[in-house]
Amino acid sequence: GDDDDSESDEEDAPPRKRPRTAAAQPRAAWATKYYGVYRARSKFEASYRDRDGQSQSIGKFATEEEAAHAYNAALAKHGLESIRKVNTVDEKGRLVAKPKQTPPDPTADKKPRYYGFSRDPKSGKFRARFRDARGELKSIGSFSTQEDAALAYNTAVSKLPALGRRKLNKVDSAGRLLEKPGV
Image 1: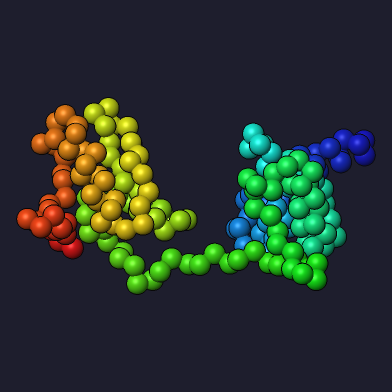
Image 2 (image 1 turned 90 degrees about the horizontal axis):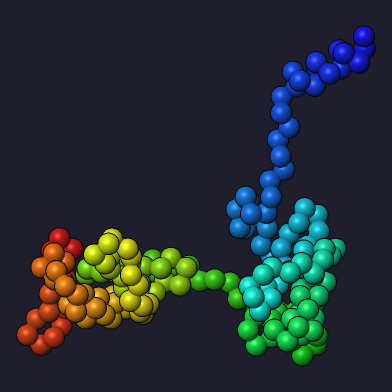
């Protein structure tokens, strides 16, 4: 009799919430100041990507410094120092924190002034792109200025058939780009 009651209590209990994984949390919650090191509950996990791009776990450590040293050692052991970011060690043997990512320039233009590109939020560069006849997005390249991206877009699109259906960036007699209307 008692066993039957306990089974029905389990069925009526609300489902347990699964713990949030590092990937489900905001990046700031699990990122650390060293390459290859992430918070894993009360410990620090070190991992790296091998030559094939597969994630390889090194282990869990009590401090982020131990994990960073293990990460550097694993890269050295597998000869990956030239293709992966290595944690810098100063002349006294202390780890140097990775540089903080600079936020995008707040004075940068919010509205694109030309056709054919978008801004990459991570790198801050301008990606020149267009859609082909089947509607597939085709990449032209990444550029440091809107003007360079717009000129690359004009060059690529002007070589395509059905040019009349595409908007080109207007250029003045001196070859300078004119901003699109409404900017």
